Image 1 (cartoon, rainbow, N blue to C red):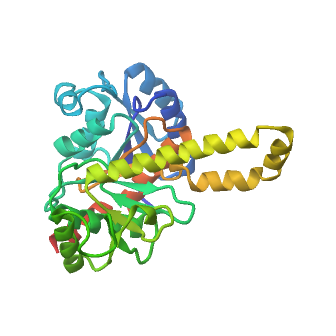
Image 2 (image 1 turned 60 degrees about the horizontal axis):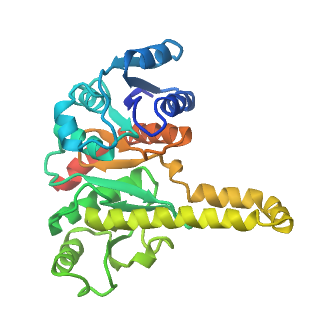
Length: 328
């Protein structure tokens, strides 16, 4: 198997660079056909690469902070780790790019530097909803707040490819996230989108509601980026608060603590199924290269899995399949 080269933003994430370096080391150990170009300040990437095989340093003198205006920062900070990482993909020196830095800056740099696949109207930020039942794919979750119905058709086409090739869902069923299951529900925009999806996406199964997401009633949900982001953040916040409350119950007294000790293994397995660390980040589908954006609070496990998923997108030729689907 030929090597896959992934450029990695060493400065992306709340706990960078330490957590990123740990994740890179774990990814290299897990995939012997993986090569990494580590992008960041010379003293950080140079020292790390000297002690790790298959890891090449690429110096970037600037960093885009989480609080900076994404588009402005990408335009001004041309030597930032995010922009340089995307440029490596554009120049063919890397097959894909991973960062746990500013989501907005990663989206802006990917579109501005790498560019869109021919025929793609808008790239879609896609994510895996942490469901206890099965993985659920959602697109878009924040890249496009204002959409046209035809954008959502492409979101569905791209998300189906990702679901099949990366999540290994053989026959994904697609739903339009709406306020009711009937075709006539929702705004004029959603009614028009429903008609287009029914006509152009063979996997389309109809409208799905918010309470269908976690049970996994459908495999892929499509929506505009505003709706998707609100839904995703609501699910993440609810999950976090639920586990916090559950931990409080389990440690409230000695009897509860003993019960928790008995259930420890089962609870750990349940928590892992709900963990976003399993997939490591959200792919930006529709750009000419594998680009995955990790959560700012990513753990080393999330960084590792984000890099490995980026490599998997390259091996499965997700970009090539998207181009064929969109042109067809």
